Length: 338
Image (cartoon, helix red, strand yellow):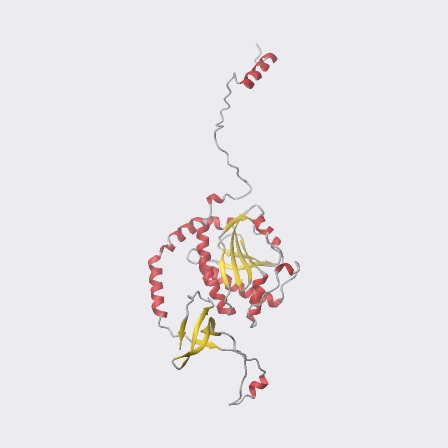
């Protein structure tokens, strides 16, 4: 007897399945919900707590701002954007040359990270470095894509990176000790292959405001760089580095040490441009003419800090603080100082 169904039996079986008279059980759970998953990308649901990266960025911003003030005597506003995770290809699509693109090693973390500096930041810093006030630079779109940075501009880039690395090292120090160095530099981000296009990266963007000019500095970590230390990030940040009492005592001791420290305030009424010849021949009684600014500038330890009005209080020359230049995040308020 044959084990095969006849043609009539096959037709009857097909008709029964089609009209539902013959129950069919595939053995599979058809009520299970299916979620689409891209096998080409990392599973970020198992990974890094972006909130811990944002806390590191907050520490970094304070240190980076102070570093710029110390070296460049510049007071730009630097604000961190919300940390985001995206595919590396999506990040690159929003970037066009020329940019200061620096691939960096952060030992012992694996792989390479990226520091991308907008040319507007470089040009403004260059102007301040040589005594300017950070004049508004050309928009990046007006620069040829193949334009290389000059030796002087590269020097400014190195100064910015030195401050950046020192601040980043100190911001990460409570979690892990890093050795940061530049691996290579480019002007086109397409040549900086720190990850594949479909790999995830963590983008930390710092917006730099200098008057009407807005630009940015990007720090890009490959997801694979932070993933091995995700537990360390979570634990150290969540517990305040496990040493909150020590930190509190250190802050109190520091406050007691510096609260009575003497600092020097200087009021700058104006500036005079002259020649070395005139300066050498200056004598007692000579009159120097200069244009008086609407506002005087108050420097604290040679750092521009306030704008003020000059006046007289109780027969003594005094200045009235009008505007804070927000170098160190000082509160803005009107006060008279004799």
